[in-house]
Image 1 (cartoon, rainbow, N blue to C red):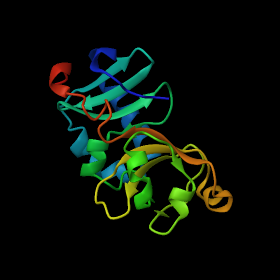
Image 2 (image 1 turned 90 degrees about the horizontal axis):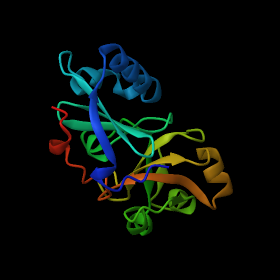
Image 3 (image 1 turned 45 degrees about the vertical axis):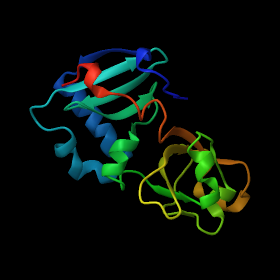
Length: 185
């Protein structure tokens, strides 16, 4: 899965045709129903949409000088954590207990007990393979993005092993990506 390390892994930015940009917006709406009213804000009518690709076949979608979403191969789109801080309801919200914070911030996957213990909660019932936002008990902003490895029902029932695979977290390479040098304005 995607573990973005350095800006040198990025190829050049390609401006997308408007039809391709609309297709990406439709995919985003299918994945994140809460994004529909935000699409005109994120992708203004006359602003070009850019795509940046990496060597490991990941891609980034950018508009107005900001990297907004990323995906690995043909997988689901994920908002960047910076975008998730602006719009925290884009993805289903999972909250880990205080004990899991340092592990999540170092890129560890989220274990089921960290999602079912007191102080933790899963605010939506989701299936396997669903992108989710990881918040922490007592914190306002998301710590990480992940993809469920088990459904919420199985996480509660089995309550062991990895429940959510970590995709991106605060202070990783994607967090430090500087869009000014990417020629996406």
